[in-house]
Length: 211
Image (cartoon, rainbow, N blue to C red; front, side, top):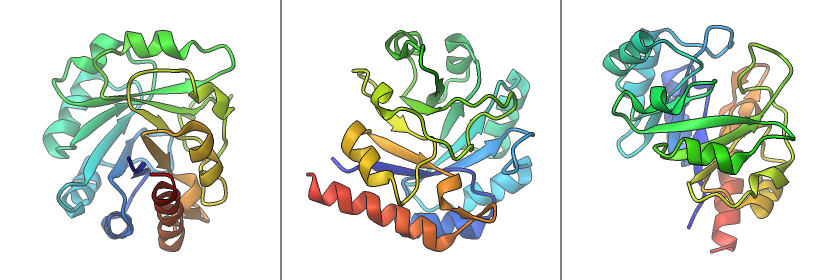
């Protein structure tokens, strides 16, 4: 089975189209004010409308209010929600929408227990924990991929510092259902079309050689 690809932190409709043309399965739309990739709802709606059929638009939020989640769902109409903060399982499941639960990996984290807690999630995304209080992803830093091999049963999405230069090693070690990249396909803080294509091609090459 081939590895799915999510290009996260997309801020322009044309980059969404580049990502889809490169073979991305999902586009991540960030709603987190401290992030340089944060979107206003009209911006995000325009990007979501630019996404081709059969490609998932994912609304990424960090500890949002119920009202904000409902506003995103109404105005942007994403295919899937991603909760990237300390949201409870009950909160994540309260909207009747497919969701991904992101977990920031620390050396002491019990991933099996957390996966069981978020039993209603469609998948579990593992990202790098940083010491910056407001930084929930997008750090460009990796974590110990051995921790991702925890034996869970839900689809595993690997994030955190991935790029064309390390993605083959990550896939070989973890064999995730999907990968999530943001900083690794940027140049000078903006999404780079050539890096997106290069990253996707590395994933496709690995998948074709290992199926």
